[in-house]
Image (cartoon, rainbow, N blue to C red; front, side, top):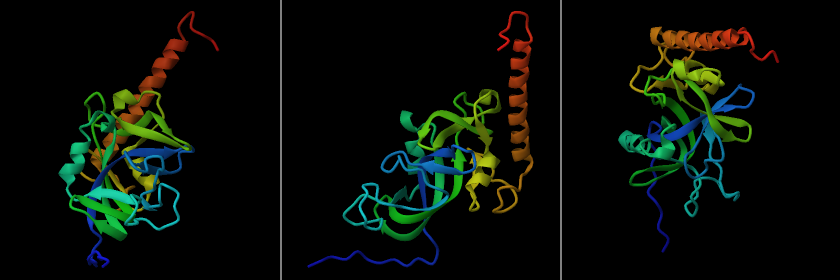
Length: 225
């Protein structure tokens, strides 16, 4: 006798939570994420479809495979994973579970997803993040990013939270941990006072860094190369 799982047809897409590393394409034109465990080698977009990480031709999620996107039901459970050392630079995602899915006790394994909100934690120095800066690692064609305050950005490649949301598209909202979502509804380019203040702080930090370099180059005995 073959047992069949009960079918669900929700009126609205279920909501789930997960953690991931923010990613920026090599040319700086696209933003995405990469997972922290299975499938972490394959960055995905804000709206994307899962594929079998083992290269098999079946559709994800397959009942006899581990493929598909993964998330948990409880936000607190996802936040708890951010406490581990290897996940400290990840961000918390709120996702809409789309397409076929398999429900488990703790979460879903599913075919498609839309990332609704990305919550960025504090900078490594403890200050509130205003940007996502080069984390020092990546995937082919993609640069990993990590939360950074205005003082720690310096000369590293970086994008503001609002710019990352714009590059991600699909109505993505990116906010600093504990802060409010960007104003302007689902349009990430609708900036409020807090977002404009963060943009100004990031630009000021970059200006300060450039002025320091210019002053150093202008000193007697400095390298002229």
